[in-house]
Length: 436
Image 1: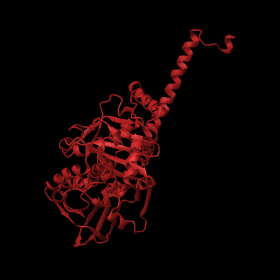
Image 2: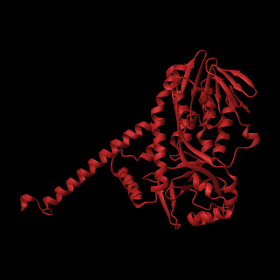
Image 3: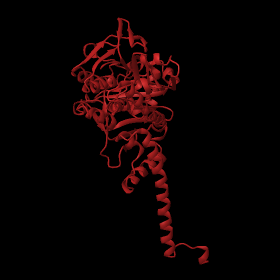
Image 4: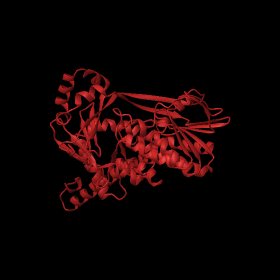
């Protein structure tokens, strides 16, 4: 079978590898020039945090070792208070689990090389999709037309493939923007070394806004501001930029010699959740489907965007097994994944509030300590963060399991209190009405 994938980003390239392994011929169309020749886009990319779901997808193709060699493990969050106080929050109770910081462009290059190394995979750059006839499989590019029996849109949140499907009767679509933008900054090495601890994801929570920083192999940090649009727009002079950072991010401000240039020169990105249903149509001679952000774009606050997209590739590969490589049937089966992607979209929004407003509070820290304590004493108890980041448990099952665990923990706590009360009563330490 010949398959056309629109979008040669990380998800499109990984899916090409999976399909080529099954013996399909794959053509990838990408609107941008070849990044191996022109260089990648810079200035608006959030570093990715690859965790178990993404690693599992890479591992199945033998790509995990090479890609993780270029990543840096982060075992927890390092919170930066306004006064400069640092607080480390491990991601797991035993402090052994970590998420992995990797540059989006570097990851894309590795996966592009992996895809083009597969027999039967061709990548055509500089092909912007301008139209699609889902009945005939005709794809219109600025350079001409092509035909395909199977078209899969892996072309991101603003997918041109999905834009066509949205026009069809029976296709639902919604998008919800946060009133926040993001802007990339950086912290360069200091005397050739990391200026901050490279083993942590650094967060400056400021109640209503925040900045994060992830380490890079060149010993720099990629920083990302998540601010209300009005705050981003208000810093419209070098003096205001310097004054604001000196007041709210003093420790970082001292590490950012190019702050003003980067702040004024880098664009503002948007944060959006997109939902679409169904993810595929089969009409006439062609089947058209969606994967990754094209089907279910989410905000980046659980570090699951790429991981979720990579897991899509695993699930679609599984569906092709079930369907005997019948793409219309496989894409129909693939729709069951929407239950999971709806859950992670909600969790990602919830985690933004947690990272922005709660992570520095004493109550939140106490809750995290309790979570880790319960992991140590209750068999089978695992925190929500660990289930999302360090397992491949379907997202919808994570939500149900956490609900059951909370009930069990509450009942267990009540039982322990009752046992303690009974023991004290037996020793005469508690007076009861009968004893009066």
